[in-house]
Image 1 (cartoon, rainbow, N blue to C red):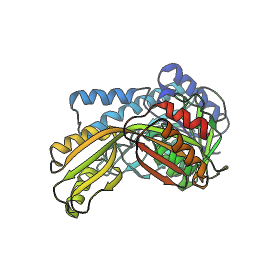
Image 2 (image 1 turned 45 degrees about the vertical axis):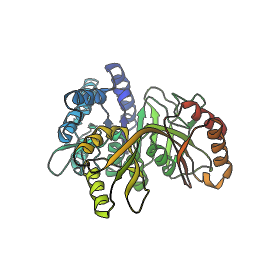
Image 3 (image 1 turned 120 degrees about the vertical axis):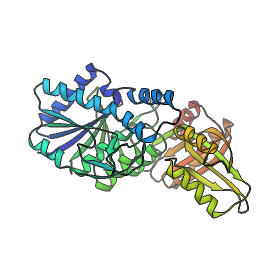
Image 4 (image 1 turned 90 degrees about the vertical axis):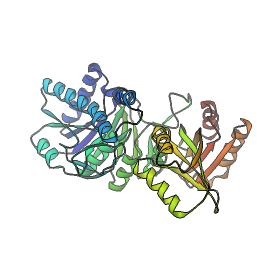
Length: 392
């Protein structure tokens, strides 16, 4: 019997009607003779609601307690699904992250899975049960609940698949695969049948809400094919594996959840730089696009995710009061595809469209599989539509 892992996102389990659809999907895999492990997200917008309620109490909630709160949504989903499957005559059991043996580091809200003890999962599978595991969470060395970051249920699923040596990992959502751009915003988007891990990792890392980027890293490391499909139809999905098709643009991603920060201080020293960097990392704030503008003064520029801004702003008033900062929201458009830098027409056509739209550029980063352009402010989806029509 093959072991397979199925992951269902929040939109797939948002109410009892949809839970019944999910149950039918699961039963179809069981009836084919598979051992089935299911990973679930919180129902619908539950995590957003819990976070909003916490922020009403404190704009910067205690990290440990926030993880305890946010992890409760997945527990509701897993128990409801298990209740339903048992009612339908299929033995099922729900397991929290710690019951499933998922151990992480000590970082709250963005924990990294360090190991998975699969003994409990295998025991339940050997007893003929469908094992339903709460995604997005684990437990650290202090036996405290940790969460893996938004979208972390994907990472839970692929990590469990790797630990169990599963044949496949299916990621089910309300979208039937990976598209060349956001199909909810770009009318000309089309579904991709296959992508390489490298291409999918770039798409996820640039902010596309398709797969958690760390799940793709795990899939590549352990050679776990990841199949993205829709919960609500039987259309073929997109397969992420080592296979690479022809070179060219595969996807265009726009990310508006970025804050650009310019930090200054009167004097510069490596000790000051290291101290500031350490404060940010210790508070779970990860910076990108770091650039040092001076060898004489402390003058750096970097970006953070919008979700970290409240915490960063609080640090400016306390631990980081030695620096002065200005900041503003920006957009980044990333053009992704294996080997695209071998075709100079792609970059030329991209820059021509941006120039025609008179959008001011902040920085451009190039690699073999990505052209990433950051703008001096927010840009419209219309720019992505124009690039999509020209390049894809």
